[in-house]
Length: 198
Image (cartoon, rainbow, N blue to C red; front, side):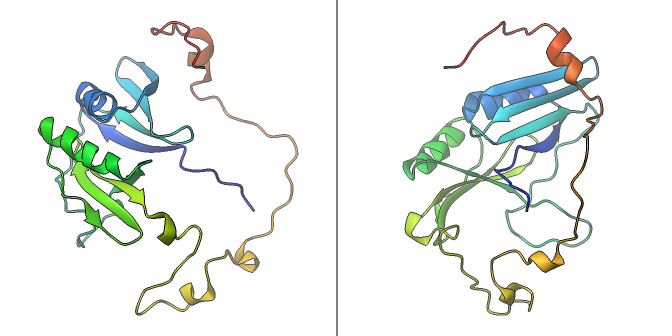
């Protein structure tokens, strides 16, 4: 079974990296930990936690998406509703709400969903974002629950993966990684200089 440790990054798109940096780094306080690019191309990563990041491609022809209420059903082609970012303390939800309001962004009231408390907003690209604090005693990671009043039969099989459905695979020999942007790490100037985080 694969060993997952979180979402390394969500890859989004923006037409305005300046506004995106102001929002994610300066207003929300997420470190900008990696900026890849060359003329006509940028790919920047913001640190959510020690394992998780949100990244943005800058594409000049992209238009911000129309804001859609979080979790509200739509028709037609659609794949992404919103991203929820966990916070470490309940009080951080009210702090984020105040910061976003003072910066001129719409933000919801704090909503109690039972297992989480959440506030909702949108980034400058129209991306629906949620900030959530887990209610420890109702944490579904520790005590999974199926509360759907009409669950499909496959969900009734339980929370654990069904190994018999996983295809068999043979251990691989030597692995090859095809060239991507590795050369940037070895040959390009780091405009921030050399900094070690202790």
